[in-house]
Length: 179
Length: 72
Image 1 (spheres, each protein chain N blue to C red):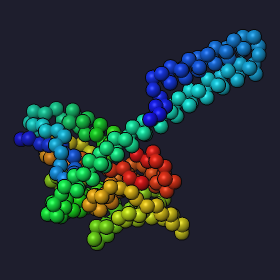
Image 2 (image 1 turned 90 degrees about the vertical axis):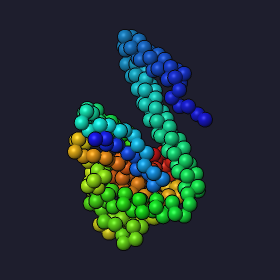
Image 3 (image 1 turned 135 degrees about the horizontal axis):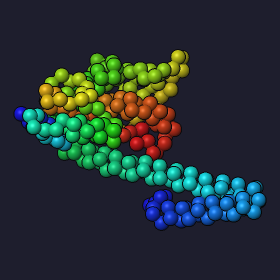
Image 4 (image 1 turned 120 degrees about the vertical axis):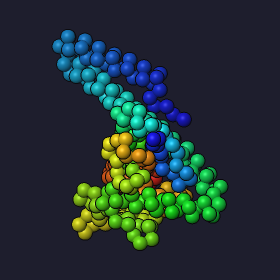
């Protein structure tokens, strides 16, 4: 697996940025302003690339942790008896009620749908789809959450949307770093 | 009296923190929950009232932290 911001890469990037800053200063001292500004631009570009790499790496790590957790949930769900699954469903419904009440969301009669308004958008969260309405435009995106009681899934989506409404656009674009 | 901070799970809540309401430093308890909310993006609910808890006091009792599961 690629490690974009491992310590060795950081050292290489840092050295390159410092060399470029040095070259920029050297050229400025010689009144070669164009060459000097190229040096500074390169240093800034390297620094920005490093920041971007660090951000991507952090998101990748989050995703890996989340995948690990999801796999754990899937395994546990497989081991549940029907009785335990029904109990889990009841608990998930109660949880959805709490989350929805805290966000002013409305829940469908069978706990398989929730409506919430966040900012200018109205969201209709269903078992495996989300619809977003703004004036007369409706966008939709599908949901890929592991097999778990669907009220838990809907509550999870409500919380994710509350934390960051732009996550809808990332889902729609199939951004793999959605976590 | 003992109170707990639990993490919601349909497979049985996980106890994250247990404290004595008479002797515990509530600032530390609140800092713990704030940190959880910030890092995991979840919310904390009171088990007694089912409402969101912004600040835990000795009277709050047990609370359940609900964290979202990523999907897309």
